[in-house]
Each structure stands twice: as structure tokens, then as C-alpha cells.
Image (cartoon, rainbow, N blue to C red; front, side):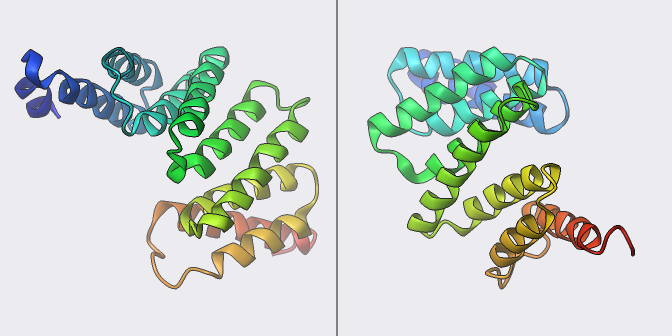
Length: 199
């Protein structure tokens, strides 16, 4: 990461320097530093917006939104994810739209878990529908996991188990991936819940 940033400090490579800031920010987020990570991502995405370079920008703004949410900065998180959704729709860059909608739902829940469950579910269902249309199984799994958690919290355990189990069953490889591992753990929890807490 340092090499990328060092080698792109010249004006001619400013776009790649901005991407380097974004990648560094995401790495910091994944390592548990949402405040510094969000600052790096904000600097990088601001530079990309200023330069009019929109390729991958919705996905980078989505990561920024997650960083703000992890830092408890929910207003900033909403601004970032709404910007990502607007840019995705405007540019017809719909490849990551299911994930953007999922993140919007997650931020909605984090900001006001008691009152915004209906709005969050609306975003999750829209994400699932679009992922199905696109044949985007990985996005579908992530959203099914998010929606299953919401339904678990609403005591809709059987529905949560049915949804997540049906999506996970579509996978024939990738058992070691983080998303499938997360889904498997949640399915085990839901299975216990269906049995009334008995192991």
C-alpha cells in the first residue's frame, strides 16, 4: 500500500493516488480502525469526485458508509451510501447495487434499531430481488444473512432459517469464505432457536 501511495504522488498519477488512499482506508477499516480508515476513504473519494473519475466510486462510497457507521457516525454514513446509490443509478453502474441496498438497510438499522426495521427490510428485499435478477449469488447471500438476522430479532426464526438455508444451499464451492462461514454460524444459531434453545 505504501508503495502505491509513494509512486503515485505526481500529478499525472493523482487518480491512482486517490485510489491508494481508498484502499488504505478500507484496509484500516477491516483491521478495526474505522475513524482513521474513514478519513483516508473520505480523502480518496473526495479526490475522485473532484476529478470526475466515477469508475468504482459507488463501491468505494459504500465502504466509506460502512466505516462511518462502524464509527457511530450515522449521518455521514447515510450521506455516503445515498451518494453511492445515486451515482450507481445515474451511471447505470448496477453491478454493485444489491450490495449498496443491503448496506443502506444495515445503516438504517444501526442508526435506529427500534424504529427503522420496516425501512431496513424494504432495502433488504429490494436487494434480494435485484441480486436474483442479476444472478449475483454472493450479493444474495450477504443480503439473506442481513435479513435473516433482522427476522431472528423479530422472532421470525423459521422464516429466517428458511430464507438463509435456501440461499446457502445454492453454493457448491467456497466453504472457506467469510460470507459462507458467517451464514453457516447464523444458520446453526437459527436451528437451535427453532428447537426452542435445546442443543
